[in-house]
Length: 322
Ligand code: NDP
Image (cartoon, rainbow, N blue to C red; front, side):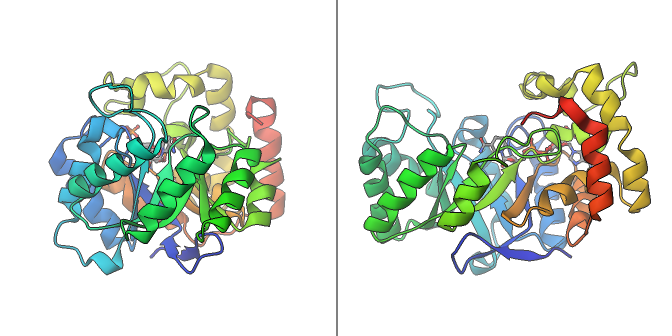
C-alpha cells in the first residue's frame, strides 16, 4: 500500500503516488478503462487524484468525477487547475484574471461532482494579470470553501516567492508547486526546490516516468509498443516526442541493471527516484491500464542507496535536462 506525505507546511496528507489523468481520460483511453484505472488506484491505497479543466477540453474532469462517484469524499484529495481555455476562446477565457478564475472553479466543481476541491492550482503563471488580482481571487475561493488549499504549476522560484508573500498577506498559504521532474528532467533542483523548502511548499511532480520512456519499453530500433503513448495520435505522440531520441532511449536501457539490483521494474525505479527528494510530496503518475497502476504503486516506500543514485547519474550523463 502507498505511503502518505504532508503537502508543504499544511496539515494535508496526500498519497505519495498520486493518480493523474492527462492525455488518458476523455482521450487515449475509453471511459470503462479509465474507471478501471481509478478503481485500481483506490484499491492500491491512492487517495489523491490530479486533473485539470483543460485536459481533453473538460472531459477528463468529467470522467474522473464519474469514476469517483459513490466514494467517501472525506477519504479523497481531489486536485484541479485553472489557466487555459477549455472551449470558446473569448477574451477572458485564458489566464488568471479574477473573472476567469472565479468562473473556472464553478465549471470544475460541477464536472467533478463535488462541492470543493482539496487543491486548486494555477496551471501556469499569467504575465498579463497583476499577481495581486489572482491571489485575491484565490483567497476568495478559499474563503468560499470551493478550494481548501492553493498551489501553482510550472512557476519559477521568483514567481513562487512573490505569490507566497502575497498569499500570506491575504491570510492563506501557497502549499505546492507542480513542475515536471524525472531522472531525465531535473530543472527544478537549483532554484525551485530550495525556494519551496524555504517557503513551505512541496513539489507534486508530473511525468516522473518521462511519459513512459523511463519504463524502458521504447527500445531503439524496435517497433513502438502497441497502445503506448508514443503511438497515440490524439496528442500523446506529440507530447512524448521530446524524449524519443535514440541517444536518450539507449541510455535508459542501461538503467535496467540498477532496477534489477533493487528488484524493481524500470517503471518503479523511475517513480521511486523522484520520491528520494524530500521536497517531493508526490509523484503524479499516469496510466493507460489498471495493471500499470498496480505496478507503479509498489514504488512507494523504496529507498535507493546513494551508490545506485550515483550510477544513475553516470549512466544518464548529459541527456538530462537541468
Ligand atoms: P508519467 O511519466 O507517469 O507517464 C504515464 C504514462 O506512462 C502512462 O499513461 C502510460 O502510457 C505509461 N506508463 C505508466 N506506467 C507504466 C508502466 N508501469 N509500464 C510502462 N508504461 C507505463 O506521467 P504523465 O506524463 O502521464 O503525467 C502524469 C500526471 O501529471 C498527469 O496525468 C497530470 O495529472 C500531471 N501533469 C501535469 C502537467 C502540468 O503542467 N501541471 C503537465 C503534464 C502532466 P502508455 O501506456 O500510453 O504508454
